[in-house]
Each structure stands twice: as structure tokens, then as C-alpha cells.
Amino acid sequence: MAGMFSTKGQYALRAMADLAMHDGWVSLGDVAKRQNISRKYLEQVIALMSRAGYVRSLRGKGGGYQLTRKPEEYTLGQILRAAEGSLAPVGCLDCTRGTICPIVDTCSTISVWRDLGKVTSQYLDGKTLADIIDRDEDPA
Image (cartoon, rainbow, N blue to C red):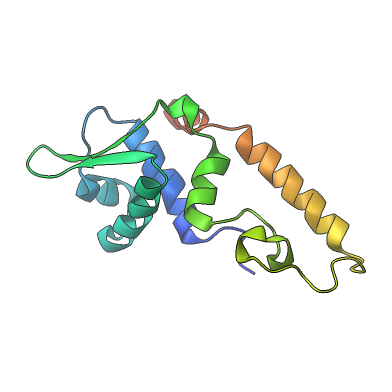
């Protein structure tokens, strides 16, 4: 396992942070260049953010994308859930699948995974998009 989150989640955070750092309508092409993300893949990620109501778009010259709310009103957990679907560290705790693990009642490791999921969610729900921007703008 290379990591807990896919590139969709990683790129969603980067793209949302990029939009938050720029006023007005932001071209997706500009975001793709600044973040070194394929424009085609970024379109898929931004579509997820749009579906969640986190960004709005304007077509035509001078158009682009912008956040629908202030950066401090988005938690990192919200953005990652919109991109990933779930923050569950293991598939058997992913309630979005609609199935329950058949050995959940007897699994000796379930408490470890539940606790990890809680810690991860608490951390990500306690951080906002503004926290990323503030850290990125610090010169130190």
C-alpha cells in the first residue's frame, strides 16, 4: 500500500488550495500548470468538487472556477470525502459500499482500524483549507 489516499484526494486538496489563493475566476489550465497536474485528470477532480457544491464554474472568456465559500468554511475531511468517497482506512469500514464485513463481530483487528479511522477523521475535520493556505504562505 503506497498511501491512504489516492491522487484524486491529493489533487483535490491542491486544486482547492490553489483556487483559494487566487481571487476571481481561475482558469483550470492555470491551476493544472501551477500544480503540475494533467488538465484532463484535474477536470475529473474538479467535477467531484463541483458535484459537492464546493466550486462553481463560469464558461467563456474570463471564466473559470472559484470556491463557493470562504477557505475557512471547508474542512480537509469534507474535501477528501468528496474526492475519495470515504476516509475509512480499510474496506470493511467503508460504509459507502453498502455491505458489512461478515466477520466484523469476531475480527480481532477491527478496533485498531476503527480507532485509526476516528483519529484520521478528527484530524482532517479539524483542519480547514485556510490552514493549508496559511502554511503555504509562511516564508519559514
